[in-house]
Amino acid sequence: MKTSATARLSLALGQPRGVAFGMMRLRAIRRQVLNRAGHEAGKGNVITATALIVLYLAGC
Image (tube, rainbow, N blue to C red; front, side, top):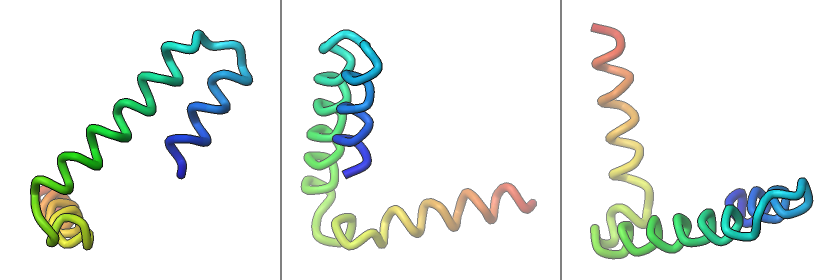
């Protein structure tokens, strides 16, 4: 939802249409990556685990 709102905002601010379409392509790519990763990524477990690892490494 944030991606489509950002794409609309970029059009409203006068950015080229290619910018908005590029953002929508990134959204589609992100969705494909999550689908290929399996059901765990769709639930956010992989993303949460990655964020926790980054926080752990930042604290070291």
